[in-house]
Amino acid sequence: MLKTGNDRLVTLTGQLSTMFSQSAQAVLASTRAAASQDPVVKYMQGDSAMKVQAQEVIKKMRTDGTWVLVELVGLNRQSILRSENDSIYSRVNFDSVRQRLAGSDSIAIGKFYFLHGSIYYAIIVPVIDKKQVIGHLIRWRLQTTTPKSLEQLSQLMGTKAKLYFGNNDGSLWTDLIKPIPFKHLDTGQIKQSFEYTDQEGNEVIAAAQPIVNTPWVVSVSFSRRIVLETASRFLQWNLLIGIVLLAVGTFTGWLMSRNITDPLNKLTTAALAITGGDYSSPVAVDRNDELGTLATAFNSMAIQVRNATEDLEKKVIERTVELEIVNRELESFSYSVSHDLRAPLRAIIGYTTILKEDYAGKLDKEAIRITTIIKENTLKMGRLIDDLLAFSRMGRQDIN
Image 1: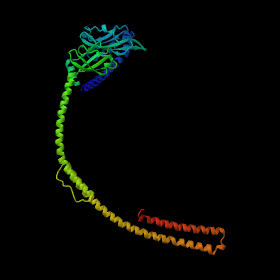
Image 2: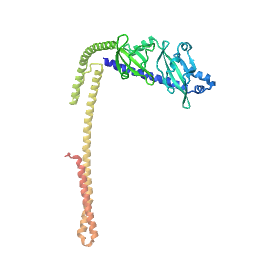
Image 3: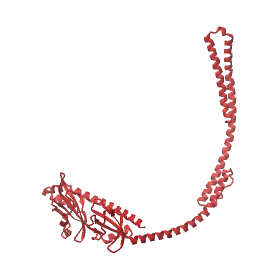
Image 4: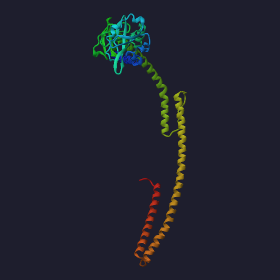
């Protein structure tokens, strides 16, 4: 059961990692677009006439109350122009952490910082002119939520799960409300599940995944005890449901056997009778359900098969009589054709023979050759007639 819980943890943290990574990419893209606008670039170049337009650009970057500060800073990390939440900016010293942000040519999301009782992080994007970094646009966001929201998220993830975010160097972990102590993660423990004992002494199973393109790690943890209790209850319910389903299935199967197999046996008997040529045994129709409809359809089929068989037998007899008449006519025709064709052939052969015998002395060699050819072809024509008659009689003979 723990393996199932571990697999679920790994899958859940992977999904959360992907979701927050996509959100981070969207914020980076909008920040980068603002840093490339002409008023910002020209103001960072020293064109003071663009101050109002640049101020308007960075003001629009504070899309809601969580974006407490948006500022343009020089290469020395000193603030040049800013739009801020006055109440928060007056309490929080952002200058103390600005110098620790990413390198001068980077586009990055910063680590979590705990400042004046709240969690903040920054997004830093270079302002570039002619492929040269001339300053930075930095957005500071207050990471805020409520215990009620965390409770709802825990219920959504199930098993009283707890969600934590931290810097990948382990410098700060938070539940999005306050910093919390958390197990130090080795590189090998990221992207897989692990177990530890939390600050309250509870045994916990957890999984962590890095959030791509950020210095953050997201972790989801389950109480080992709750996982095992949930699995135990799940097995008990499955066993109880299985027993009930088995009993219901057995009883239902018995009823179905009585209600279905008897009519099917009757149908089988009637089908065997039809196979043997007996169409006089219809199936009794004594019900209005699907089997009754099937029995009615079967009886209709039997009647149609019987009528079709009788019609076929009649047609076979009629076709046989017609075929015998046609065969007799064909035989008579063949005889007539043979007699009528042979008569002129016999005359040709007779006259050719007379020519060769009685006038042989008067015929030259060419005439004798021609009469010989006439006689041979006439005899060949006679053989062809014989073969044609023999072929016409093949249809009335048994196949050997």
